[in-house]
Length: 163
Image 1 (cartoon, one colour):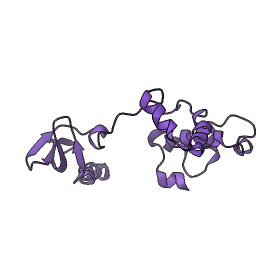
Image 2 (cartoon, helix red, strand yellow; image 1 turned 90 degrees about the horizontal axis):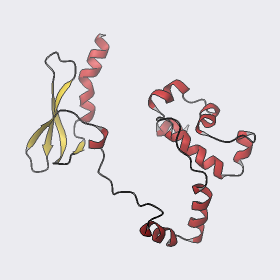
Image 3 (cartoon, one colour; image 1 turned 120 degrees about the horizontal axis):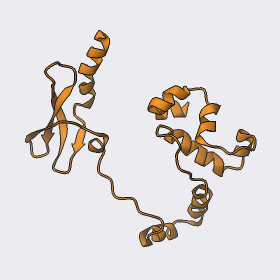
Image 4 (cartoon, one colour; image 1 turned 180 degrees about the horizontal axis):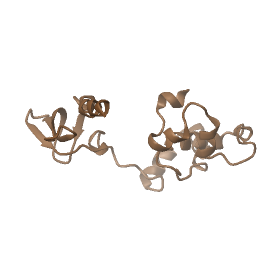
């Protein structure tokens, strides 16, 4: 238990200096206050762009990534204009991939689902799957870098995917 306690107290160090976006301000994590029992972070100190310091109670993934531009739907006028502006080769590539997209089955399977889309679009992949449909589960089972249990709990890193 002592090792876990040390880990949880040191974990906030990994967030020091990270940029944070909220609906009210932008800043970087400059520190934290622990709960009275020293078990977890009670509040995060954020040094704002205007040099003021603010406290927030929690940080979610939405706060650690830049607010992105809304996606452009292919069905929209803008989406159709973007597709029309592609080269013939880009449109052909899009056509090969678009028909292979499917809803991802598992929350932590994005890497394997992406590979399955690519494999389904390549005729040579038929030998990979021995005629069966290529899905994220079959891609997971075909590799030996990570266990299914690890993927089910936390996914796969790009480094692991590369192997």
